[in-house]
Image (cartoon, rainbow, N blue to C red):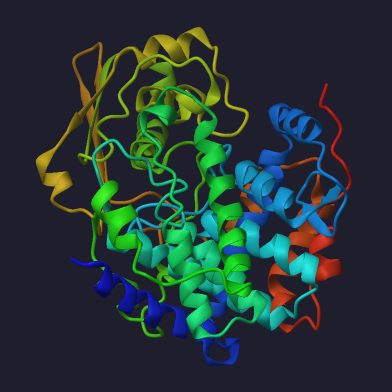
Length: 451
């Protein structure tokens, strides 16, 4: 594969983004976009309430601006809002994802779009088109890229989504849009997956960098300082993995990847979700918490088999530990933003959880991200449950607006007004003459430290 083929594919993608008009998008796609936007806003507000994110905002000391720090009660410059919003969005592993894109397309571009649209007071139609472009471009780069073993997708494959969407808001023509996308494809983070499993929050900063890099790439293109040279073939291909440029334009305007994603009900890596769902089902049937358990075997696909650490020292490392997630689900009935990290019984059960790769489950990728859980009780009996995909996946128990709102209200019980604003904005945004005031309202009142 040569840069020339990547350049040609990027040119086609740029033409599609610059010409994207919301009136040409199927109603079902627009409805799904509104639901993804609702999830993004709500989950960002949940992350913004974490003590470490309050401290980060204070240390950042961003100057006032016209863009909301969602859920933080502040307005800031678009650059600060894009970076800080992206970090808050992914901080609790609750953000929407897409198994075919191999990552989180919305998180790579939605914070940048919302920050820039608020700053420019864009129309609702243009903002919605930019959000859709952010998702579809990032998803296609995810499909096109096969990262080397050990590489984490945050801040890498999806940077081009933020750039394409920012170019759409700037009103750039197809050549300039392609140049913005190509420039962003040359700005990936080479992050290692072990940073996440070891609990290093730099993983969250990769997403902030992706959104800000997208804004920068679009500004370069607007200034005439960017070129489309097919750099993705070199950055995402030669250096970080393999790259198939045909995926960038495959099914444009016909296949909408945003309709094929998943919403999360567990605060943990999506690879752990099928196991958690299986354990919750078994708990309802067998009363796991009240029965002595000898061992739990979690069989999963090769992508998730590495999340086998039985120890954790912060929430991030716990969210990437299948033993923790399984033990917490079994003994507490949930894996949420406030799930305890220091319960002795959870830690003891986690040490009895074994994770193994299963060839039959790996063979079902990418359509299924399955897990098979076998609980061996001390009395010699066993219980088994297999789950093909997480609850919330578009292919398996998809969640609608009512379910997403219920989750957000459970995670943010103290902020019903903010959730109401998020629901209203997500529904009405495409028809708004200007979006600035509505988006700035999503900052809400500044959340005080919880006692």
